[in-house]
Image (tube, rainbow, N blue to C red):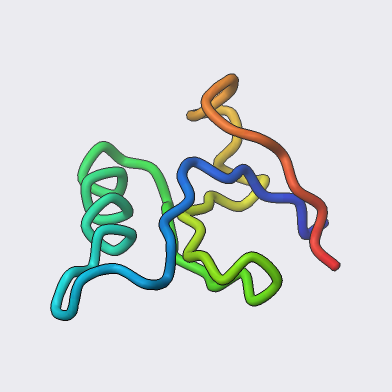
Length: 68
């Protein structure tokens, strides 16, 4: 399964030198979640996601998205 939960979305056009999606993902990893950052080209945004195997740790925090 390639299902994942989107924890947060960040616009790709952030200030130069700013990595808010990476910072958010790092904070979630410090909490024990297996968060990672992916690029959604269609919406020009960075998504912080957890794969389905980690969904139980974040139930109710985000939307479940099926991989294309």
